[in-house]
Image (cartoon, rainbow, N blue to C red; front, side, top):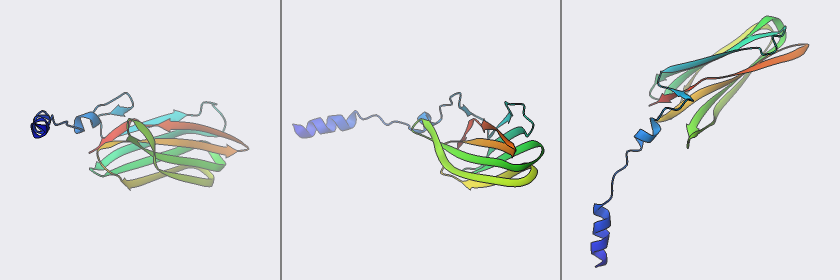
Length: 148
């Protein structure tokens, strides 16, 4: 009698397609292969002009990320911090990060290629700052792109 119940349970099992759950696009994501964001200094200050970040799918397991901090003039220190974020369990968290600084320059940019696990969304968060006496900063955030 117990064997009959187990067989009955086994026969009523319904397969679930988990990939359809991953493919849902929210307002935080885009169906495109790339995303970018630009932010201008909120202070309309004298040092920092703008910051830009971009993310692009290069293959089924590689993304290209780009960050750019631009100043109005040569500053004592220019900052560009990049955070590659990965969506796991419905929320984003930092997957990898890089911090770049340069002295006596008007801008700072970096392009990075990163091998990533496929099957989820990735986005880039940027921190952009310029210090020449006072420090001015802004942040950027792309939409997530699916790497599959």
